[in-house]
Length: 265
Image 1 (cartoon, rainbow, N blue to C red):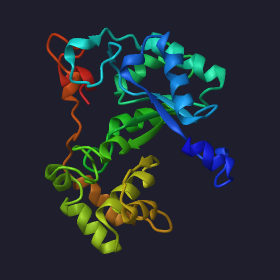
Image 2 (image 1 turned 90 degrees about the vertical axis):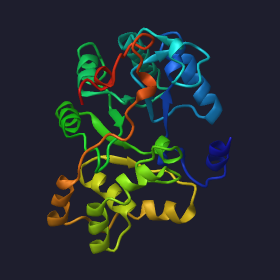
Image 3 (image 1 turned 45 degrees about the vertical axis):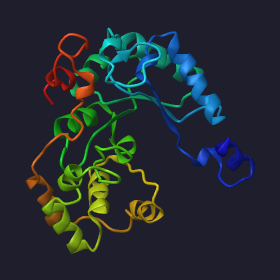
Image 4 (image 1 turned 180 degrees about the horizontal axis):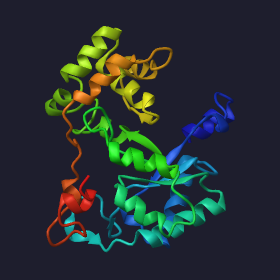
């Protein structure tokens, strides 16, 4: 209702906003995909969303809330799910469709049967996990890669450390190279990390409930990381901060290991 009120009162125009939503893992069945979309549109009081993403490349039984409920995993059938996503696009209820947390291999498999190429792959990506191979593949296929920081920001694995645990803050915001670059540019480590994503051609999706940090996250334009400092990012040790253990189980999940979930990436 908040969005509808803003549009009605002329605070902002619908066409000036980009609204993305995601298909949760319990709604992968082809018959559930349009119902999930209708619920989203009803909740937001919208006629369409700009982008609709398959949240994860695994499926769970209806009613499952936590991804750690291994006994409720179902066989994966991304092809059927994607067919239903394509129908949503054709219906006009979403202006683009894409995926989230898909590896290069899973994207490649999808492209073998997709009538509509995913517009976006939204994944964990930041200076500590650069995803070079995946980024190159997406670029070669015309798939935009988006740095997924939204859901992470308010949880323990946040790449930029907002409300995060100390180990994440150490990996990103306390990284000595990022801090060195930030100091030279008179910016914060968070700004430098986000700007790194923009200069690599990605969209960045930070989230914060703190007004000062929201303003800080927006202040990414009118400056850039110079070439000599940009090269320093290549020296940062790489480590995935969201390994996805919740989606892996030797007997109950379709993915028996992290190697299978991420296909070695």
